[in-house]
Length: 289
Image (cartoon, rainbow, N blue to C red):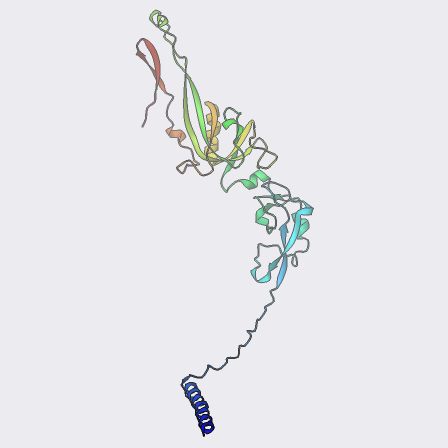
């Protein structure tokens, strides 16, 4: 009898467990269906390239292009412009560019175009470097008058004229009893501002061989025709000095034209002697309009 009770209780326990698990399973939401992942299809579009002319070395302005540094590089056909040299259309282009001069600094791997070089037989390098309407004018300089020789091609300078005026001395007996007076008066004025230096002597480019300074005897500037005439005229009046401008400017934007027009130029200054404590001091007088 006891055995039957145990069996019945065990069966009821098993049945209760099965019923409990079934009810719990019914209350649990079904798992989401598995989504099948589809691998994306990658479409590769073939780009058409053409060979264009390029440079295989760094060049400074005025350097000559030699046969060993002319090369070709791949260029997308859809990005091809008329300025680029397509080797397929111009198979002899390499020969045409040999002995040409760089009109501007060129970087290794840069494409070559006719606007970047001066072809053999074209205008000289200096004529090609001039901006439209400008002239190249040369004046004598020295280390003392050109910032110690640290002015190089491509720099910007101000051009100053220094004039020397003789002071009339008092030769009277009263004048001879006074202390010695100055016999010369120096007056400086800025003729031009922010002028581009094209060359020092015959050096028109900067490179490793030129060093930090070029102690030249002449400087060539880029000026307009009228300013070039004024500079040549100023050389007959006095000494020419150059002051070097900073790469980032000097706090204001300077002009590249003459500050003083020839028809409005100030006359030569007259002098007035002022005596202070028995000492004579000459003072320059200039009339201002």
